[in-house]
Image (tube, rainbow, N blue to C red; front, side, top):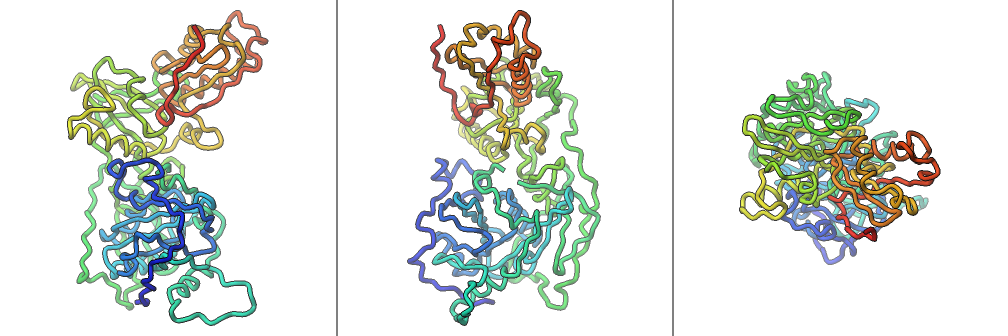
Length: 529
């Protein structure tokens, strides 16, 4: 057991540390408890050069030797994914907190876990240090974890030794810092590994995660340890991780340390089929009015279980995209809706973040409508769902005129349109069209008719003309917006113009994607009569 670190907490390496929830204007009741320990700094700390200091809030955890620093997690892994990873590898329910500090200058995220006891922390070091997780979809991508005890809040610890030829001896009182240098100084990550600078803000705000699936390779825990990451069957029953008890025999005997555990059956399963219709009564919805759009079958079956895991399912590839299972839970269903509710009503009720689509279906058994909402980011879906559940439990509707039952959908993997929503395209459901005096010639009625011809009437949510040269259109889904933008771009180039229109009238027309109204509310101002 290493010596306890200094307990003089008066100084901190983070004079500008800001609580992420406060910075984003979020109430603690609005987020998952694991996002409570997210922080922002602007110090420009480089993840490759230092073991970062811990925030002052975790002094007691450090004194009790329950806090570990972990380097090498996939850059888009959420705090929920961190917890699932550790619990799955140890086969114990021992993670108490997942701490993330995001540096907005260097764009690095630093991660810690707080365990239930010092003994649990020792066990995590034994099981996770030098653990290599292999991406099943791209075998060239490997994430190697490096684990050490947290170094305290007073200062950051340099990983690499100074270049000066004079080498001072390492004081015994700096044993923790010395251990940190020894732990990381020989790290030379290969291209494509997780030690590269992560994309950060998405980790804290949840926008975001990576990929993986099934392998027939056995589990192997002797260094370097490679864990093929499996996919869990959607309906598979899993064993609940047993609770940690200090007196439990966890098998850390040196003679047995390198003995591989018994193979887990889920490592030999074939990948599940995503979105298999479970009940014929749930109609296929989303983009059916657009013949050029991808058909997505959504059905509010039983609520997806985000913690379901037969192994390391939180580091999983779906459809070849780099995101975790947690980040594919981006669908929310709104059930038993009245017949007069519209796409605009659903859109107005959502303030959490951009959407991929809003679509309606009909439950033939109950004779009621439902809506399927696909968020760009799973964390936004989780936040909206929690608000709807709270409103229903308290019988205090605010998003709608009445309480609505909301359930989470099954995993929806990143597809081509979700990828278009990321940089550099920034696709969205909303288009902005600009050309001086264009809408005096081509008015709202003509614009609406054109859009309905291209993508169908049901997908055109809103058309708003600000003035003669500026208009915005909001669609029910991103695919419709992409289709219309492509058509308008072709018309601006003089291709496929409406009957009676001259190329000169369309020359210079600019069509761009704009912020989703579920992320940034629209301002309805107009100079048009």
